[in-house]
Image (cartoon, rainbow, N blue to C red; front, side, top):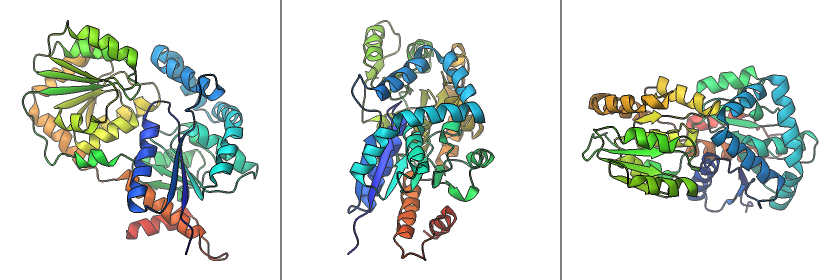
Length: 390
């Protein structure tokens, strides 16, 4: 009797999207193979005095308070030389903890949904301190330099354009598979069969799992839209934002319901006429899975701008680059129900089940490694052929 597969999934709680993607993979794998030993670790979920927590808090504060500074750093780090220097320095800082984690868990394969811990593992592999397949799951629709490592055995991405980006960065095409981004099963359970412009008209507002961006400003602008019967806001884990909005609510014209962190996101998306949100990769894919039209505001420079551009080009969303235009864009969409129906129909054509495809692909890689020496072929090209037969 063969030993059960040991899978280590590593995320990083810089935003909740990377963690939710990891949970989606973990959840699907546990359903399909209950005998597998699956460990999911949030690599940056440590005490408040640790170095890696300082990295996380600095990153989040920069995005929220100094987005223009983040924009400059993001674009500088995209260059091959400067980006490689930055990613190498960060990876070296985190590699000791990564080695302890791998030695403790002894995984047969490691799946990463964030580039910071992935880079640390790649340094260890380059130094021949570990010999385990490394899998990168990119949860945005634009590739950053921080994901580019020769030591990564397989890349799972959302679009053809990302394959091109990785190839231009020197990654062999046979390492890259278009799987889609992993989304938790609850969003499939709440998937619309047909969009209905129901009454009362509810508009859902989100600022990501951390409640970042100009949520207060978005709420004020939407309160002026006469076609909205109820506003629903999810503040995520941002307690300060939640308290601020609760105080602000009594002065609003539109009835407003405010949630903190909630497990009802899929249900609230299904009931909404539209989602007004920051364009985080996971939030967008969750909305596409449900089939709710989107309007974007406060896109973080870099990844979220790439996400916003992609989804707008697909016809799934409108991107409001100046939040002062939010009122006009939402008013126009609500006055044109057929346009909202069309946006939802386009979303529901999206057929890639990221979690399912990734689990199948990784299982193929594991199965290949179990073959006797001399018969092993772990190329992602062979995995793609196996996937095509499933």
